[in-house]
Length: 513
Image 1 (cartoon, rainbow, N blue to C red):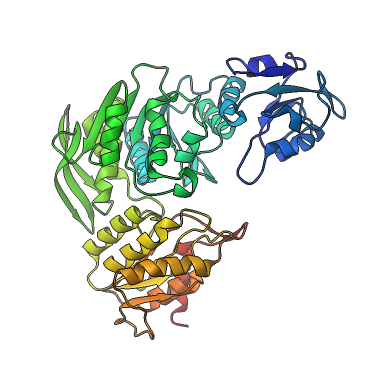
Image 2 (image 1 turned 180 degrees about the vertical axis):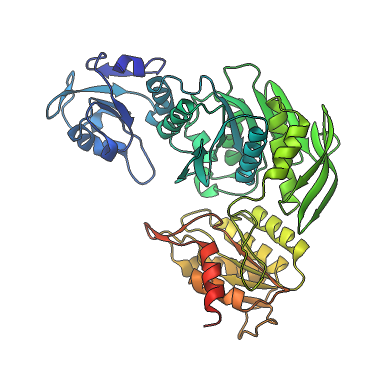
């Protein structure tokens, strides 16, 4: 594709070089640049792509998008002479925010025949995406999903590295999905992605808001800024070029109620309140799942789901409301919901030979931890044993809150390490312990299997899991929170293989050490 075509509709501050040069690919990582590529220099948090322009040119870049021409590794001329070709220089105000548009141009609008559904919110995005995927399949569609656990479509599945990929990666995946005749794509949209414009060129047909509670304040600075980022999916530049574009919003959530007042165009509200367009009545929940009556503007129907916990009724309603916005009938919606047996790492019961109730969940915010512990309380007969930690290099303020929640709602808490990254796990644990002590829970001096109540600290996560399952009997329930589906642990700047689910089975195989 000609460079000038890649730049159609892009606000360019200055251009030097040949606009008719052929571009064979796009990259924002100099290590991925091949001959004929367009390299886009992004300013990140730990690294700046401008520092790698020379590497990109060395690898064959024919054009470079920059924010700062003074950072270019040579005196500015009409072109920069590389090893065997000239390099065009395109200056823009914000490289990251134009990357999405450049990618859409290069891949020639791959979503032309695809309906895009964006789901955002602090909690519930992944479960809602699985539910909606199941509904779409029942409706005869060929859905794809881009989310926290994986990117999947047409029998293909790739493990996700981030919830919402960088824009050029996202558009490339959509191009692959388009070639596989995918009809609908469900995208989990993070606040980081919205703030950085990763989906700004994507025509979202249905936008879903699940809820908003404390998270990512290390990035956004305040809950108000966090909400502002989330709201861009509904009020910003991600609106659909197909009419109508529909917003689906949980108005039982106070931030959702505010958002509904800000959202232009068509809006479908959901929740348990009588004023909601889509709501659930006669809700029953237990260890075998949820039963309810779905009430919609198009009639009512009975719902059955094997998902556990009251919070999941909101995920069910979110998927149902989104499906209604897509024109799917309520009987098909109910069938799709009933067919989903579970979601990896979301209230996932780990079956084992001891028949010990062990649940692994991704809960890593105070609100999510509160909800999963409450759900576990509904089904436990004996003690509730909670194992969790908090991630390093992330919002420190939530650690005390999560400690308080765990201490107040559990019988026994084992504080351990999560993904400490570059922080000292001991410091992270001490902040969690502060919250546990505020709840009134006491530290244990010694352990008595099947009887102990209180908290203890074991920073070896595998050992902490082993300790918890060995202290439990069949009437107890062990909840391991924080990592869910993750198959790694980040220590320092490296990822090490680690899966809570496998560690549970290993601990039960080995028995007491």
